Length: 282
Length: 282
Image: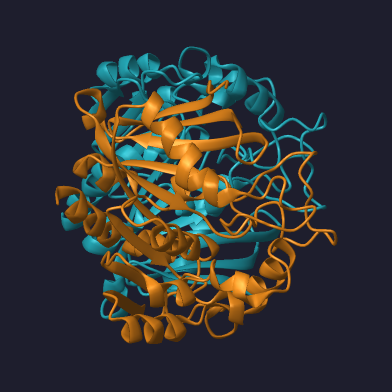
């Protein structure tokens, strides 16, 4: 297998390096672009990695440009890897109606089972297996992994951690879609990617998965009180109820006045980096 | 005169507020959009203002999204105002060839004298007079002003300060076009906006203006050593020579390995905020 990386951008950042690479991704059957931030510590010793999963419509760039995470990551010695939010390219089918909440930019970090999506939409395997294997083979990083994300990606981070005990040391989320089986974004995506069988949906829904979790990673969730998607799409109270029923250690912080934007993420990213740094320190 | 403001976006950020407004700008004869960040301190007492002038192709958004300045501005109690980089709209002529380095997004923060540019391209008067008057009338800010910027806007910040003694307490720049009369970007812009008379160019060229400066504001300039525009467009050594000849207090820091991007700006914005905060503290 060709696991070469093509460097497509490089900028020094807080003494470390922000770079972007294109590579042939086997799990999703197309070329993929990801970004990695390596802190200055990586020049002398391998560093742990935080995987960041972005939300609907985003690429590898949004978080790296807008979250302001590099400053503290450079201080704490944490690498950050940001994949794209879906497979892309002419050969990858997108939303039949051209909508932004399904298909390109909206892979929901699951493995699709239904035609025509199942061929390429295997983002779960990509972000949990293929991308970390590639990163750990090519860069000065350890196998200590944390995962976080925003909105669709916040939910993706929860599902990646809940489905793969032992794979991550830490998990957090901003404004996650907490119960996709119950909201319009999730129902649209799941019914197409997974079909109409709701038993199958539960395997990709964090609020369902938490009931049977065998590992208890302290979970930090930040949610803005003025998020315009809060009541219809995000349903944090469903996750809270599921966590309480399962005795899962969830800290949900409702941040008064904040919305769904990267201004919100930037305001609280430092707390999440410290959350993951504590887990890396073990 | 109608000096009303239309709010077009609002997000809480680090306990303060990022907002964007559209207004009718009389100096440039068109609608203009600007962004303002108000730190949490502004809810109890007026705060000083840092004006940020962006570079070619930018709008009010680039700095606010990518520089990560709000974190420390919220701590130091500094408001930040980011205007657009030119007049815009169907009634505003742009580059005849559709290039990105002249016209829309490339106003060079001067007052044009030549037709057809002189009607709208009066960005100097807009950023030095009209916009501060508007900001000081509508928001809880003091009349203490600092100014900074990047590339075309870094040069704009120098010119605004050098041409208007007493108006700013502090000035700094990232990767400024230090001697526009000597570089392709500047020569293209000046020959169109100002005509062919190079005596007139000198009134808008920081490396010329510094020779006759009557005020000595400590000037901090950061420049990346790997900036792809460094040798052809930026000419920091010309500014250094002019400052030395005029005994002007310039600190130029060449930052090894950094480029022209916002990854560079974000890496050093805190030092600039501290530079301005010291001047605000008097």
